[in-house]
Image: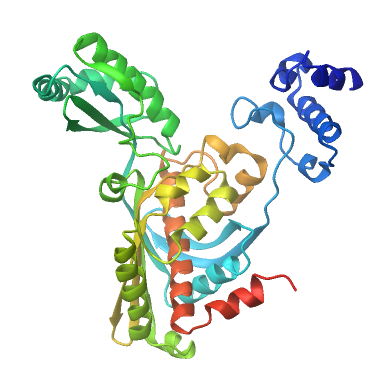
Length: 404
């Protein structure tokens, strides 16, 4: 080890070269960590304590590993879900450092479950990638879009030649001057599908350039996809899973909690709808991002996609003394294979929900997972609005979110 650390310290060996030089990414991670400890004068024992096999993770999930970050995982539930794919009572794994979050989702799950459960459905499914092409003029741009429509079958074959599971569902063109975005939308099975869509879109773009020479590919991703940025396109057209969950909370349950349906509805309308409109927010909700982030970390999703996955609307209606509540998530980007879903703790969390790995038929697990996530968001959203209606938000955070 001393020889390796000395080589790193002198610059003869680079940190990123260790995996190849040693032929073992686990040893490489240890040597990097020891080098940093000596170089920086720190101890990295906790970072080095991990269940991850870096021989499997390097080249797929991480580069230059030194260990892992450990985030507490709590569980909320049982949460009764009656979806098209998710049916039954589920225990929701939530990885977070925010005190009161797990308790909030847990109480919401109890309220939803004793009122008959959450109903959920994926109403749209498609991962998008939008290459940007440059044309000589507007006339060429219009002709190009017409050409793409006439040659969609050939473009589809080129795209699908790169994947066993991806299917091109739609090509959505957008023109600005002499610029054309082609927003390719793919069915991606149980994978979240961003990489699948990217590789397939590259093959389609290559076919287009070869067969329509006036079109020049500027960027394989032209920011109309839209990935990891708040945006109106995904809010309206969807990316990943567009999923809705709803529940009707009984009047006697609300009475026991000391709140009326009208009071909860007023909080939702004035806070989530009017307040969000005033802020020009892409999230007409209380805290979708809290629940989605915690589930994403626990289950190995692409955490940066919380940006668009947490856009959405909470809707309420007082009904015969009870409360109807729904959450709509237009761009929930989740998968049960690929990415971080194969890491050991993340796979166990997916197993808790009965969605680890590929589904039968293909895509069924990802659809089931999306319905569970939406139901969990519903539970967390309901409880926070109830807490606001009862003026107990600060008390809850003081009790559960602060060290004593």
